[in-house]
Image 1 (tube, rainbow, N blue to C red):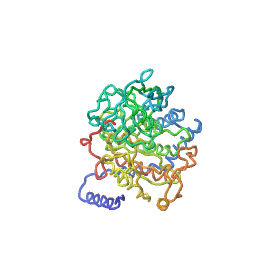
Image 2: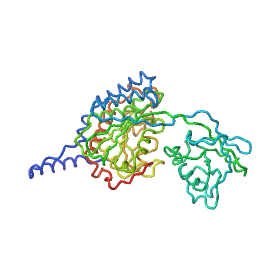
Image 3: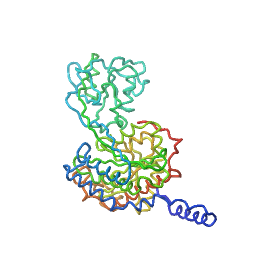
Image 4: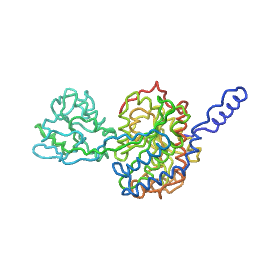
Length: 489
């Protein structure tokens, strides 16, 4: 995915020369991408990592969401951005942080079977929900058509885990008159390994409005042996935590064509999170500070620092879901930067053109994502490193933007996956060792970041922001405003 930048630059110089000789028209504005990349230095970015490490050191060794360390991180960013002249917002959102009490159970013929509560936001009445269990004609139960002539009116619908999300399964069951639902699966919301990728869609629990339980094949076998009513008890209650995002937006540029840039601010509880994701935060923060609140750019730029990514991307999801369709259409693209200073670094771009083996969770990337990948890959090539693709997924902060139909792109230097021998020859480092051996541990500190990788990647962050702040047109651009038809995920 190399981009032939040098001929393009040569052509631009030639055109400029012709214009200067034949016309008195003003010279075109200098390219903002390279200018901003030159301003975002590794020393400038590193100073923020030092401060984030200090914050963790005085706050039990972490900056996890819901802790004083995270709030101190919010305050640090907000202060620097306000001092630079940005208008900064730190909107609160509620996230599910656990449960209390309750002993969920499915009682069949007097015997209790294990059941997992799909959403802590929806419980059964006191004493449980007592009803018959009935099944659609087609086990998936994804649509009304799957039910055929089978009636589940007033019953608990029993479906398998194939074909669609749990939200779609509930919608079909409710349309057929069900009062609850059981999903037969070897996986569960707390242990989703082995579940079809579409089953537990992002934020699914917010859309479940009747009691929904997850049962294993053993409980399902018991249901098949009875035609009597059963009792479904889902009585875990949610524990909610208040968290914050940090949002800053330039005052200049087209507000109908916003370039959104983000990184998650929280760490895990087991460490200070300096690579994951202090590195992405530091690069985006320094880019914002160097760009300033009123750049001479065609488009508005929004800088976002998300809370609760390590929990379940709650911060970015809450933000995207708070927007109307018109506001979603105003977002031209979203750039996400997560872990860009791994000590055994690789150089990855998010696979916007889906040229690598697509991840099983993503059907297609929104139009414009391929161009973003080319922009980022071209910059890395110019920096002397050959990039590789990383498949798109649903477990990072671009996921809600992706689900809304917004073009996305980003960079990473890798996490817990081991570096291959081919990658060692390509990038150096050590094969057989994780890109970040300290991933999600107490070893993710300021002493274990790769400054060379940080410098290369931070400059690429700034290059992409400056490039798209100037224009979202061209071969690597995104659909214009009147061709966007976004949807709330």
